[in-house]
Length: 527
Image (cartoon, rainbow, N blue to C red; front, side, top):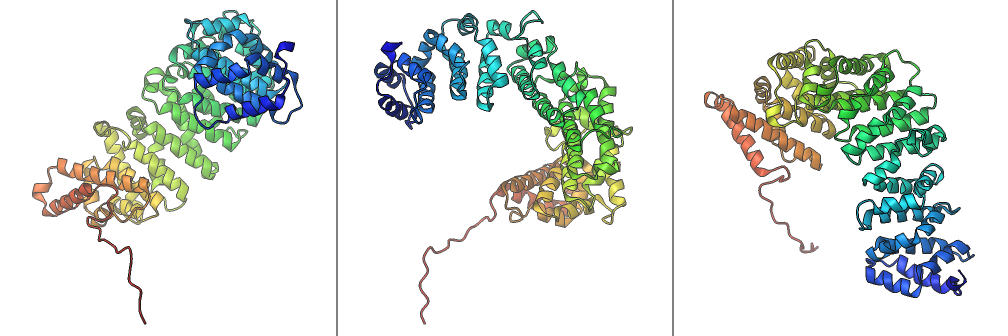
């Protein structure tokens, strides 16, 4: 390598710094011009020689990153895979991170037929080194390694590397997790979730070799609270993947979560219980879960959440609000709302009671939003109403709660809620928007002139979300009123409809129909 020795490192440092930190886009031409002056072997030799020049390593790493991001630079990577192999084993975390990123650039951009990049990974025995970087590298190295492995999974040949047919392979992710420290295990589990998120076919591979059971085992163990919390966060991320339900419904995950949430499980830390509640809500918020899992399991989870909500321990604000938010997620689907509002369930009653409770602002706001979801504010208009029995139960719950309160009527409850602070009003607008589709609620809303005045008042809200929620509420009332058959028989409703129509015409943000021009300059006052 004598021919590639660096005779003037300061010159290389200056040129590399200019290239690496150039504020504009580096093109293929600029990359080629730079490498004509300083060939890749020269730069690699400078990195490996560990010259004691301040900032040289970090600058050369940044320079190579920008070179390999160009198409010209990427095209050179196959010729320098031996450097990548060495770089993945370097003592320097910067060099390791660069090597991992270089594998990603190779897999993303080299167009020489399907599986070309994956074959190079096999030929140079790169995959085991990526796994070692994942387990033992610093956070940046681990993240870069994870990205490279995700890119590897994009080809069938790459899938064969990551999911070997032989379960005894050292590189099998189950075996890797088993021999890793707690930090290493979390990283392996995080990789599993990221692989699962790539596509349904990759998710199927993850499921078929039973890798999801690693997540289940960790949250069942609970010997290390931080470890359990980290894994719960990964499951929360997993539950948000659109096609996750079809796989999660075949696992015992919901039963495990129900045990974590359970009223008599005093050994579980409140923060773990809160996350378990939120994950359950996210999973059960999807319509297809009700078609792929038995109702008894769903009811077990719901009863566990409701038990926490009603227990004295659930006075813990975070846990209580998590339970209400989860119930709101579940109630956002038609099946979930119908289950919560069924006559055999008392869950909706606790949500309604909390929504109109005069104590606990956070709890009240979470309950109002949850009830807004349950009554269909975030569902399409033609999917807001439920079956007759469920609708009757909802009406009964609202009227019963009102009758036991000082406000006596639902309209009194709605008005009282609208008269509170802006965050509570926002939740109240959402609730009314969903409820007013029901004729009984429309009558209640129109019976209080103060409610109409507030929802048509363009000055009342200053925050964007409040303005939009108020306007959406105004639209919903107006539309429900026009759809009713009461306008011709009641002149008072005609006046209300006119006021609502004018408010709708003004839009959500226009506070005044006419704005008077204000002088930019005023004359000085004279003594």
